[in-house]
Amino acid sequence: MDVKVGMSARVVFDALPDAAASGTISAISPTANSSGSGVVTYDVDITLGTADPRLRPNMSCTAEITVDTRPKALTVPSSAVRTDSTSGSKYVLVGDLKTKAITQVTVTTGVVVGTRTEVLSGLTEGQTVLIGSTDATSGNSTSAGGGMPQAGVSVVPGPGQD
Image (cartoon, rainbow, N blue to C red; front, side, top):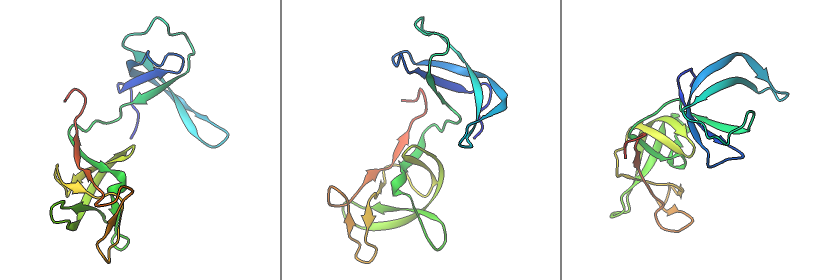
């Protein structure tokens, strides 16, 4: 995804971690910077909404730029998403806690953010997806805690939608 002028950003300052500020991208350099390791970067100007009076020019900071929002996206732990080696399709294992049955469900995935993967189709909120290893021949599941590994599918609300 491309970074564009007008996108929102959250800026955290190394010396003042409690002085996080929100802003908007106001300019993107047309000229690239190249590091010795071949990484290409572009300077970005962020105009802060309000500035903490303790901020000084050239302070080190980290910016988190919001490139996309997915209100009420259905997500699962990325470790639950598996790929069929023959077809290349993605699937998750869904467990029924009452019957201990395990079903392979084909899913269409979207964006991956951190350790979460968006599921566009194939699952509904409230199903239990398995994380951990499952012995396909015996149907036995293992996890660090023992028993049926699980993580509930969750809906992550977008900003301001609690």
